[in-house]
Image 1 (cartoon, rainbow, N blue to C red):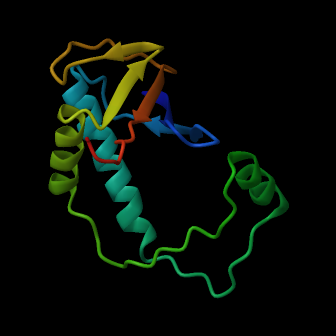
Image 2: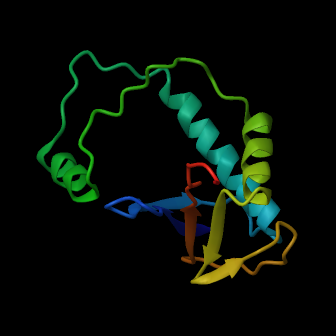
Length: 139
């Protein structure tokens, strides 16, 4: 099943970080299962990319224009060669949701609980909004 995810971050000039196509192995029944499946796929993609080393780094004209439209142009170098543990990453993502560090919307409808029953369908739009904590002191 193919879904599309967008990550948004409040408080930034450019409030989104592009849309990414995600291939899900099955239709998740709860938000907990959806987050777990997305995190596992992301960790596998990250770990697989650690072994890729280009001799010459370059960007094509299309990549340059695409990255400029998103507001950040770079080579996506990885300075840390440590592989991520899937289970720990899932635990951190679920804890971050429970702590209110991000919100999840499916087709513009906010999902408020990890155990909420879902009906995710082909080509649904997922939005992950990272919330920023305010820094400062209380007087």
